[in-house]
Amino acid sequence: MKKVFAAVALTLAFAVTAMAADSVVYPAKNGNVTFNHKAHSSKNECKVCHGDAAPAKIAINKDAAHGKACKECHAAKGGPTKCGDCHKK
Image (cartoon, rainbow, N blue to C red; front, top):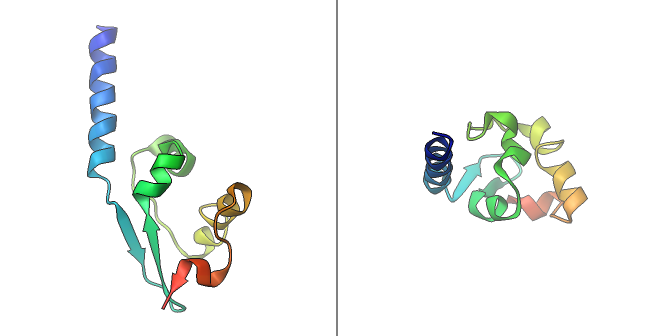
């Protein structure tokens, strides 16, 4: 029974990953931000961004993006942190 449950869980995890959008564009006044989900998911486990709610959709706003959701992680892991690095006009 445990093997069946594990197989179903793995199948669902891969299916959700396959269904996730490769990229999402967030509109912003100073230039849209294109979030490449595929690139981020290859570098991090789902729970890094989604927490225990994986694979739930994340609500991103300016405060979240400029805080823990994006910029703080980028600073810690060497990602882009300057405005023009993410915001493209």
